[in-house]
Picture 1 (cartoon, helix red, strand yellow):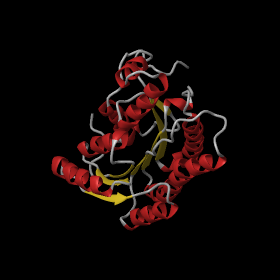
Picture 2 (spheres, rainbow, N blue to C red):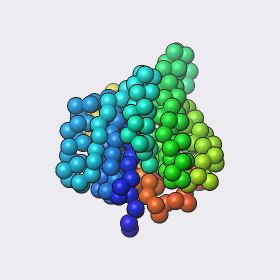
Picture 3 (tube, rainbow, N blue to C red):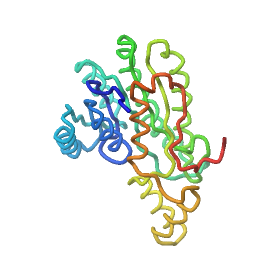
Picture 4 (cartoon, rainbow, N blue to C red):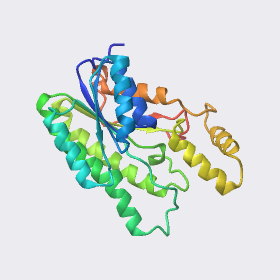
Length: 261
């Protein structure tokens, strides 16, 4: 299927590893130019050179710290001077495991700022240009936890759910301008983040990492973790021309993990 992404430009947040890196590679393979943003500027530079060489696209690497509001403002300003973007992949890091009670309010505020407010700042900065061009894609990566809360991930469950509500609201406001807004819900995809969560689970249960991972995979109907490439291909489709009538949606990429209809 031709996705119609050649000549488009995408801004990918959290592009240095995991799902963000995977989506960047999938978009580059479709001929999409990229702006990669993450904390690890050195790693981004290496990835940018690799993608340019492999796919013949233009890739720009920009350092970004979502915990630093000035860094976010600087990114938005830079993107505007470059002429804006056609596609935004909103991907923010996850907080540490916690329960719902007994968490310092300052911790809640810290992660609200980095996971929600600063992502909204980026969206608010790039969407107006999409509306003017009458074409755009906003894709936010959330988590299966927004539908089926994950034990010990109270902060993530809560804050990512707020991004779903924001995205649904935004989708209705910009739909007539040719801009789609969707949220993709990964289940357990084989990323560094999932590995870190499995390690924490292993330590809590006093078992090995392999045992913890196997126990987790056994709860998934497909009995395995998803591949980054499988997740990234769904995001690439949502970014493409053929998905132009899909908006305000929650797309599950979870191997059947979420039990709710």
